[in-house]
Image (cartoon, rainbow, N blue to C red; front, top):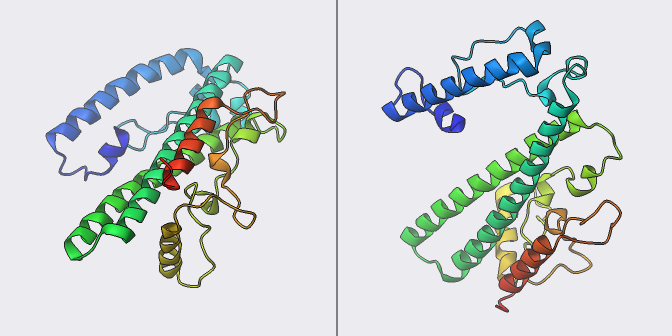
Length: 244
């Protein structure tokens, strides 16, 4: 809701956006009353007005300085950590879905789409999927940054599952690695045409992005994998290879 509100000019807001701003402002008022009880350490922090509901800070433990965070209740820190772990799982799952959708749409575009009209509609659809991919990436990076602030231990268990998400990691299961080319647009075109090979699985020269691997099922089981993630990855490979 806050993202939708931020897209509009404050001087000329539609009625629906005004209602959303009012709803968010009321929720913020309730949230602030709870914070006064469970986060008394915030009393020493000068907080800006909540009128700008699209950009207001919630002052969760991860956004506080280490000195102030040390005064937070341990249970509150643990609750946010669990929330951020769930956000990382959700963001990665959605990212896999949209990357798979983009791979299939690119294949269909280069194999079956011709003429200006269909190509324009195809580019618009790809643009919407790419925007959702960018949103998932931003959500994952924000959640992981919060985890890093809450638990800076370099040996923390969650770091094995949630690695740093680089641009080179954001690719489909059967997409080739982005080629080295001085022109970014040309590099994307070469990569897209590589999808026409039938979606062959990665070989010794193509490492599978870490986002497609299964998650360990336990802290002592480094080789075990989450069944749902594994089955989903196998389905994507079979579908991309035109086996299904």
